[in-house]
Amino acid sequence: MSPAPIPPSPERAGENHRHIIQDMFTAVAPRYDLMNDLMSMGIHRLWKRRAVALCAARPGDACVDLGGGTGDIARLLAAGGARVTVCDPSSAMMAEGRRAPSGGLSWVAGTGEQLPFADASLDVVTTSFALRNMTRPQDALTEILRVLKPGGRFVCLEFSQAAGWLRPAYDWYSHHVIPRLGAAVAGRPEAYRYLVDSIREFPDQRLLKAWMTTAGFEKVSYVNLSFGVAAIHRGAKPS
Image (cartoon, rainbow, N blue to C red; front, top):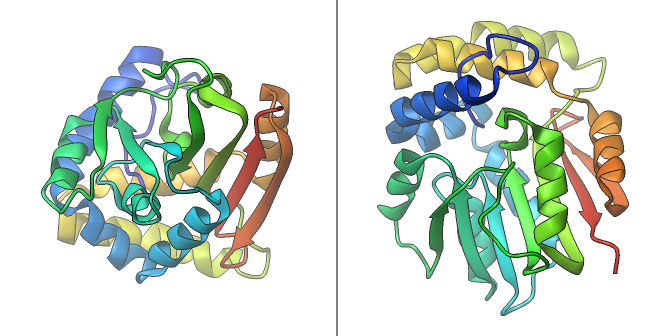
């Protein structure tokens, strides 16, 4: 789960949006992983394991976890023998990640809209609760396609649209519980109010699938998690 302040305009105000997000991540970094566990009651860890399994990364594969923060997805990939780089614009988040055993991970600063990797150099790109916070997420999808090798795989774990019967309870929890947790544990309720708003504003499962198809991915599909609270989208670069 990736907190950041609510953007000042529908266009996300470009560089201003990016700087505000980085400032907020710096503030919440020390309690980021704890907050994820509390907000999701630990379920986010199961979602991430499912996403990593769907990457089908092989030993030696070159993988990047984009917006990888403290490196929890990256460590799961590396445990299977992949060569993994965490790419994130927040140095504070990556510094927190380096406090834990790294498992041979590499760490590099970068944004989704301008990835610091060569064309056709990666086997797998993952992103977990990060696409939603990028200034231009559709441009980021184009960049991800650029850096993947032909046949390379993109796996995106992101919040999505919950099933209709679940939505009232989920909305109540999101609006009343999450900001209070953010205030009590991280001292930043505004960051977690944004979390709720950004989930509501982000494309649902079908629209994100359409974005990926438009960007040029093939074999695009998604699987719902926890009745649509989150979803894993997958696509491949044409070979």
